[in-house]
Amino acid sequence: MIDFSLWPLLGIAVVMLGFILKFNPVLVVTVAAFATGMAVKMPIISWLESLGTAFLKTRNLPLILLLPLAVIGLLERHGLREKAQSWIQNIKAATSGRLLLVYLALRESTAAAGLTSLGGHPQMVRPLLSPMAEAAFEQKHQSLPDKIKYKIRAMSAATDNIGLFFGEDIFVAFGAIILMHTFLRESGIETDPLHIALWGIPTAIAAFLIHGTRLIRFDAYLARQLKDELKQAPSQEPRHD
Image: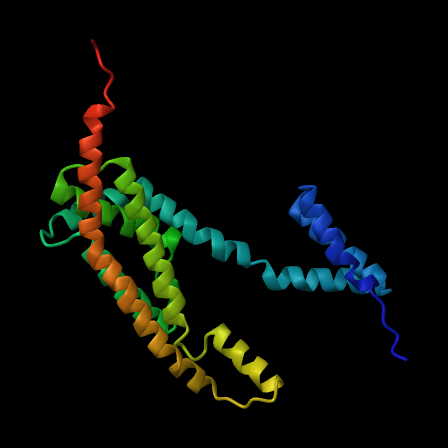
């Protein structure tokens, strides 16, 4: 009979309880690791060695995450958004929909080549893409109500998500491709990761066509929304009878 114990799962319960009670995440994870170590009767020295090794392996992770945010914040402080808006206003043929359509093509194609970090919400959508799309709309209509502005921002974020999600599935070394290959092989189904990636191409093309059509119609949709906003604007003013 196999000696099976559920005590090593105690750490999961500690993590759940800690986050429910909103304790410090570092403290919760440390206590969970200690509880798991004690549950499997790990010597305290081995537990400390494991904790130190894990810390050394991941100590550069916060720097990787925080450094780009600091750089983007510094660039925004020195006028990155304003420069992007003034640049797009010099292109007379630019509209919000056309700009996002070009970005969708670039985002999906670069993600398919494995360059997934070239876009993203904090480093591309917020400081560059969304301000440029807003400026393109304002150049055509000389007005940008908050409702229209938020719709442009939402569509900018959605375009980035769609381009990344369906583009990276074509890249053969993407983690999801390897995960599917491993899962299928363990289930007795032999496949080639390259074949899995190739079968993602029709889906990526369909996603581009569907969302591209939405972006082509996006300008007309925003124009109708602006027209409705302008119609409602006088009725919202207080009456002075």
